[in-house]
Amino acid sequence: MSPVVLLVGDEAELLAPRLELSGYFPLQASQLSRGTRTGIPAAAESQEPPAPQAVILSPGSDRQIAALRQRWGAIPLLLGIDQDTVVNRCRTLTSGADDFWLCSLGPSDLLTRLRLHLNLKERGAGGADAVLQVGDLQLLPTSRQVRRGLRALALTAREYALLLLLMRHRGEVVSREKIRSQIWDDQPSSASNVIEVYVRYLRQKLEEGGEGRLIHTVRGEGYCLGETQPARQRP
Image (cartoon, rainbow, N blue to C red):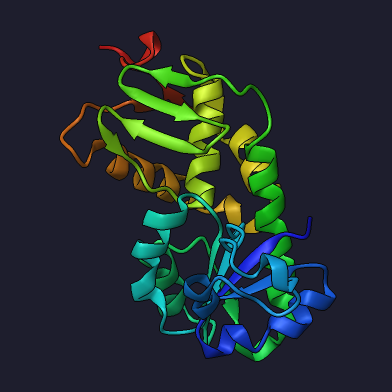
C-alpha cells in the first residue's frame, strides 16, 4: 500500500497531484472528518480514512502540530517555510516538527526530505516487538507508544528513533558516531551540536513530570540510558 501523507493547509494541498504521481496517497485534512477521498471506491467511502504515515504542513500551520502529535504520535511532520533562515529553522524545531520544506524550491526538495523521514521511521520500527523498559520508562515498538509512568510522551520521529536506539542499548554507552550513522545517515549537518540538541529535547520530555534523569552523558564517548549514571562517571 502507498504511504499515506496528510496535507494540512492550502500550500500543502497543492502538492497532492505530484505526491500521487510519486507513489504516495495524499489525504487532505478536510477529508478526515468526511471519511472520503477521490479515488476510494463508493462502497468504501463510509469507512474511516487510513492513518497517515507522515504530515506535510503549510507555512504558518505550526499551531496545529501539538494536536497532530496528540492524535498521530511519532510520525514525521514537515513544516513549510517561505525562506531558509536560521529563525525559520529554529521555529521548525521548537514547534515540534521534524523538518522543514522550502516552498520556493518546489516539490523535489520536499519529496527528498519526505523519503528520508519515512525510511528513518521504517528503520526505527524494525527489531524486536517486545516492550522495552528502563525503570518507569516503557517503549512499545509495535505501536510506537512511549510512557513514563502513567504519562504518555509525544515524540517527534527523530526523537523516537534516538530514544529507541538508546533503549535497545540500555546500560551501554552509545557513541556519537553510532548515533550519527544510524539516526542521521552521516549527514554533514549532524556534525554540529544537533545530537546534543535532540538529547536535550528528549530529556525535557522524559523529565517534565519531575522524574529523575535517565539519559546520561559520558564525556568524550557518548550517551547511556539507565536509572543510574555509568560507573565510570560516578565521583
